[in-house]
Length: 203
Image 1 (cartoon, rainbow, N blue to C red):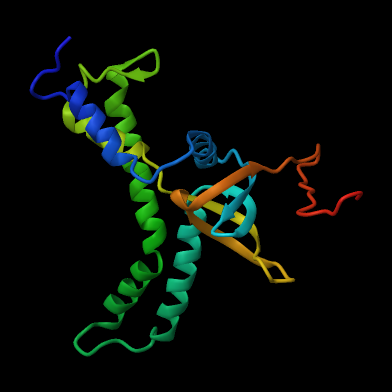
Image 2: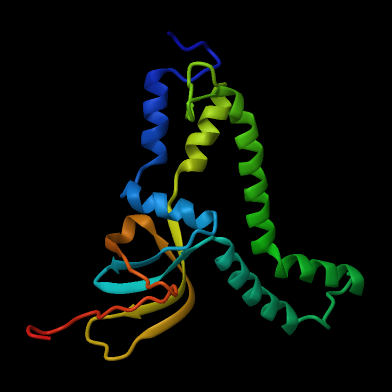
């Protein structure tokens, strides 16, 4: 079946997937990232430029909240200093918007995803998109939105070569194409993860 002028043909589909997937690696890891978006947390270890980072995959909202916390601290520094010509109440509203920009952006993205899922629903067959029937603009947006370039970790521990200590971070964002290797960290019945990073022979 040939695609119509308002639909993506096979060559266009291939080009769109290729353009969207530049730098994207392991589909298994991407699957875990998508589970984290639904708050199904999995602890993982990542090898990044010679360092090892371990943490729990989580939704990008966690980094948006950290970003807003930093922006709010900046806003507090100038809270009582309305610029000339700007009413105090207007300035306070501007600071409020500045301090919540991360969450606002994330919620806008989530809304766009929900709207796109509704638009795509009529064109699904056995859970897969029928590109021959899907309008080209919807198909392009779906391909783009399915492309994952970052993952988010919480409760992070970073081990670096030559460093005796451990760097601990509340939240960390990692570009997927910087992940050289990764593994799942097993947890016990209580949800606690235990691991030994390195051990010598005989231990």
